[in-house]
Length: 251
Image 1 (tube, one colour):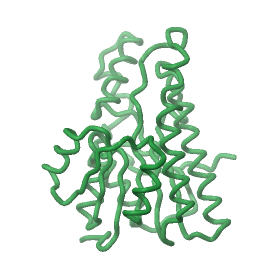
Image 2 (image 1 turned 60 degrees about the vertical axis):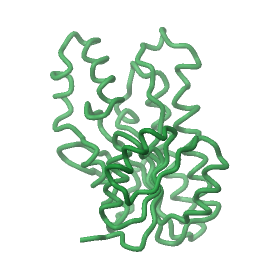
Image 3 (image 1 turned 90 degrees about the vertical axis):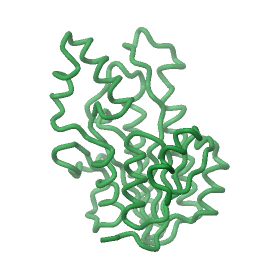
Image 4 (image 1 turned 180 degrees about the vertical axis):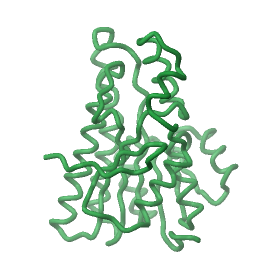
């Protein structure tokens, strides 16, 4: 049954991995979806798989893109999934530029899109879904500032959700923290790196995280948050075996 008929969604970072699963799941539920990413060739693959999804090849980090696209598309669901792949090196092998990469990309672009969603603002009843990471609570010693950047995105969701309530906007802002998974390019590289660090196989290391989180499962979880009834919980751990689990609020 279609649950998002007549609603509009923007997925930032829709061309591959979990973002592609989110875009396809929202589209299958009846939403008109605009998928945004940098690479036109990857967006073409998304369109070939689901012709109903409109695409836009732009730099999502550009604040004018966020403002213009939200103003034009007027989404009921905004999913910000995009981010940079962190360099896999221990802290003493990093430079400040590599260490801060996810702050400069992930946090910055999330800030731009989140700010525009509140400034416009989106229509009452809209949902803003921000992709954080399980590393925000578990750490990630081979990924530089990645875990800290993703923890900041979790805090940003809480801050924005509080402001939306204070101003009675009728908008919910939620953070999703997916557990490490070998089913994406980013996750596969991390699994190999940590397995090598521990002297075990990639399969052994991935097995520590239970059933793998797939793009399809991520899409289903985002759909649940986009269309379902919500509790007051604003952050959710996402795993391949247990699905969404509400996390306690952080002060």
